Image 1 (tube, rainbow, N blue to C red):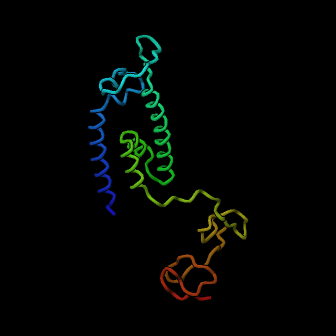
Image 2: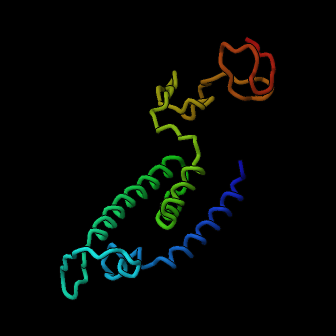
Image 3: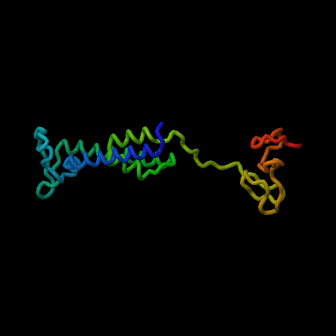
Length: 179
């Protein structure tokens, strides 16, 4: 597996290539919006009956325009999904959403390949402990209560890291734990 710098460089190169392709096919991008009403004739598609809405036929809908608009709506849903999935996985959702928006199917494939497999656990209520002396809720990692100073956990005599009461050996340094 390539390192993150190589992945980043490959993604930048792909984005630049996709931008060059997009510039070449710009009329196809604006065709669903009716900005270039004759783009389909330029591409030598067969003529379909049109419904002209508005002055000068600005919203010149053909069956191709309706299909393009439906695909655009579906693609927006895909971009939103990529954004949410990337944020959930701890990645930059805006960057990945923009890559999928510009790169279309190629950008989506890049995201599906590069995305991390580990999903951070949802924020659950941690099993917090309470101080036996003052009954204040505390983090389970505390060794002493910050309010009253009561010892909450045992520590290793060599490395001073917390250990459980039933352990025989410290897992951090290997020191035998005295009972």
